[in-house]
Length: 215
Length: 215
DNA sequence: GTCTATACGAGGATAGAC
DNA sequence: GTCTATCCTCGTATAGAC
Image (tube, rainbow over all chains, first blue to last red; front, side, top):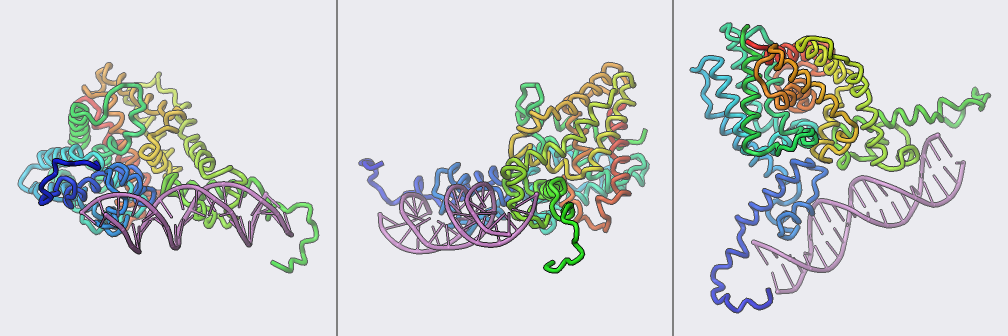
């Protein structure tokens, strides 16, 4: 570190000093930490340690812990929000719409398995204030509408759309929230492996579709 | 408080100094706090404030925050554990067994709606260490066995018992974990009212039974 | 932009009077 | 058993050099 004789061009110090990259690694580490501990219990020191950069970089780029938290929330939810906006389910039959919706949702959380944990911490600790503002509610709304339509059509049985929407979300997301507990079940599988995630999606969709369909 | 002329018998100071009662109020307040924040983010001051007793009482009765946490975990899980041990499902048909299991589980969490939150803080923050030791795993095990039996019998469709057990637990418990987020959905119902809990149980059971049954 | 060193406040835990 | 006062660690946030 003291003797880098080769470094003859100080023009580009990008490898060492890169704002974008630094922010990115901080965000990634923060996402992990916040997912595990939520805002309050998260430690800025732990985040910094994971990145390798100095703790003060967090404050330089994100003002304070709260600022970093908001940035993480925004980034985590963006994929889900975007996905839900592009769905366009109205022209599909209730059953097809539901399947498409579930597939999109499960793909989304498979891409970012920490999202449910982050949402969970927000929900219990912060009473879902961010969730409220971020209009992630639109997702649930979409699901409720599918169910209402299915009941009206007669494709689905007489279920309560509101309650069922919650239960369906639970079927999809619980897997990711409960991992810490689930992993102790005697069976040596990596819960987040591609194969297991794929299987989870299939099983969840199958359970839900069978569960709502009219007998 | 200074002039209580009536107090002629100092024999029984129970109303003011009652070990049992003090421990009880501390435990109750702690349960709330830990459910909301988990071990790390919970504040002993907040717990003390809710009870009215001095903060130092926590340390007197429970040694430290960790000790209090363990006591809360133990108390919260005891009902669930006891319930699951008394189930005796082997002589029932898979479908009846499943329904009985779900009813018991849902009654249990309806009595203590904070239990799921506590379990999940444990799961994500502490990797489910307590969950592991407490043999709460026996609950999941019971569910997996029911499902295995149902698949073998042909009463249930070809589902993966392990994955489905998780999804079923999610259907039952997510409601309680997500309350913070769910409550913002435009509909002015108290999610923990007796009527709503009853409805949730019915809807969850219906969804699950229809979901596993062979078509 | 990045680091090291440090100020400062919050919160866990204890001492000792009553 | 209960309270008040206090200690001291830990963790957030800032200052200032490079």
